[in-house]
Length: 393
Image 1 (cartoon, rainbow, N blue to C red):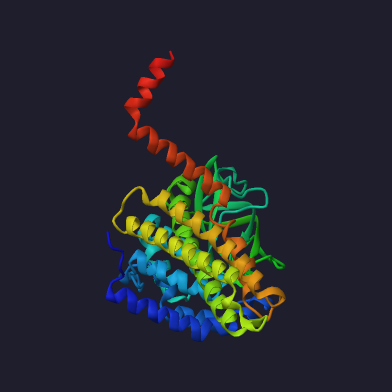
Image 2 (image 1 turned 60 degrees about the vertical axis):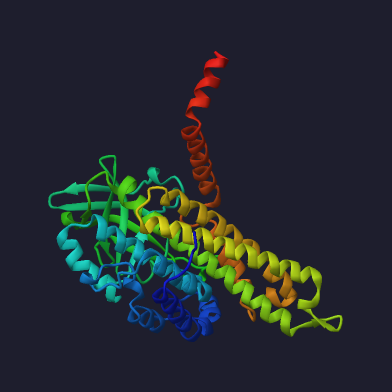
């Protein structure tokens, strides 16, 4: 099988790269230090149609195929992981509404999400709940024609500026999803700062104290929150993070090639030292391998193969751990310079570590992938396993 981009995908990738180099790269370090994304940059991002990348044209979206969407995430991730995180969470909410929202929700929200008139955030994590999403503590109680929410959400990406949140809460013991606008009475938003990485992603904690929202803000049915709505959205999130991790690793590789071609030690350029060449070689190979896994996951998503979920986990696991390793080597190659704000590799390393935590940690992916491996083995060797079990009895 030959993996090759179409001419349109190649053109789109070139366009994405040009936008990133011109509009994102020059400001990424400053945004990181200020822990803030410029509103003007978000406007330019939205003007390109990127916030509606995966939405159908009928709602003003770009209707990108899933491979092109991956390429967009790689290029944005290469420039700034924080801005790529906006693309991730915004698209997660958009995809959830597109799939599970009712007609009026789609007609009202999706055009606004496509244009960037409205910024959306995904509110699942809580102070006491991370990977164990089924244990969310936020509650929603039906009161007349409204739902009343109580609880807290934490680590909400772009929660400081989001106009609407997709909030997950327990309703009569059934995990469910709700749309909550930022000006809803009873909702207060507290900025979070001082994070290790993706510092410009403007994290926030949401506090719900008798927060009253219209009954029609329920997305899907009661009980659909985790197994359907969050699950499908998180699959998009993992796919985005996987490609974004490839972007970080690619940025590290490019930075190291430039740096080792310009800096001399012992009267020769760093690139002439054998151990440096070994590190560069490993970077090239691992970046290409991670990208191929992302292509595989994207292809399976495009054709609707059920194995795409596991393949996305594999891509996310390998790409995020690769990004951390490549970024660590990039800092090592840059030496003391790599430990300063003057060079981007320090930011890449901090951002890469975050990629191993968000949208399912490295350890969660390992559990998922191992389970898949055992199940696949058993299904392929069912008769042999049965014979062995009988022999042991």
